Length: 466
Image (cartoon, rainbow, N blue to C red; front, top):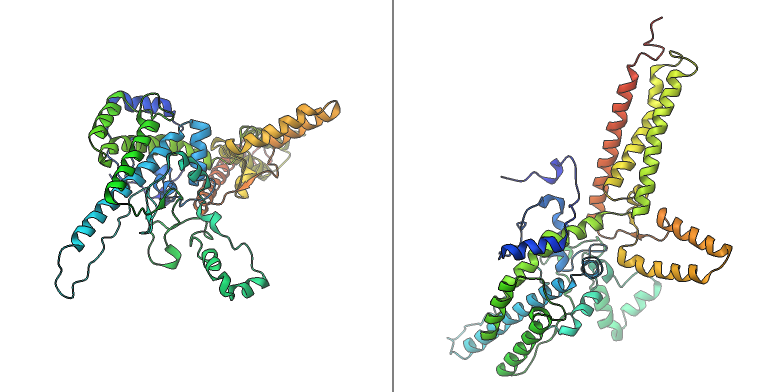
């Protein structure tokens, strides 16, 4: 059955939170062997709750910006779900698979070049196909990440919005741009990601300057010039290191997979280093990330407020609603029934609209003020350092200064303080504005319903018959 288009959805609901331990346990109990697919959603749940521009494949390709970048996704897995090994293994597997394909094609090319060709024949090098979740790599780069540097490479990976090195235009830029000694550096600076200024990257990169490829992650090393036997030994050593790191029981970053799948994979890898033996494990990890981790990550990214700001917003909303009812009752009953006109009910319409809007925004985990300014508060891993510094200062203080610092720390957590960040990703901002518009529309409808309830009651000058 065809899905409903995004523009026909009357109400957007962010993805529901899923416990990764329960979800992984269900997969392991059923011993599901998923088949990786690029576009369709795996597993249950509405796929429309996650826009295509914020899909998991684009996050893995490092084509999204803060707070939905690959770096943020890794920090979320590291500090919130404590499952960063899933992302590390999946990225390593994709590069290992790509490296294996390139090695095979290199062997075929060498064997083809040794065969005599007719006159005028031109050898065509096979092109590398795009694999979902793998950035576009040049022919001079091979997929051979170091086991100890995968996490560091992800942490240092720059999203497209952070690749704008030319922050401002100065009069010296024109002079240095003409200097031949700075031509290489200037070329590297000018050739930034084409999607950096727009806050996102295109869905299907082409040769268009506005839709160019994205700079790959620094997870790889230069193409090895060693003989085929040495390359095979290096590949096997890399595979053994990955087995010891991810697949062996009691490993440093052991993957949470079923015992049967683990034993079957280890037995196959003992006989051959073909990456197809790792595909069931990679598909299992991909399904966990797509249907659980990424959903929770998007839900956290959509939420702009914290627990304290949401509570304050809901309290203000309840106060506005009660204030609207109090205003209507005062106009209707004071000094006596039938004194004021029925149109005075519309004085409470703004209060009801604002109150219901604030409560609807709070149900989405957002702060109305930050949402209207496309701002967000610090994410959990960003707040850790700030809270530690504040706690150190409060502990070191004594007397009235201690109480003052505690009050300031509480207000900084409760109110929309200046310590907030801009939502850089354009499509996340668009989604948040859609949610804000829906909440405002819902508040207006609730306010109008409140007006209809009171405007026809026999308590106004036009409805009281004496």
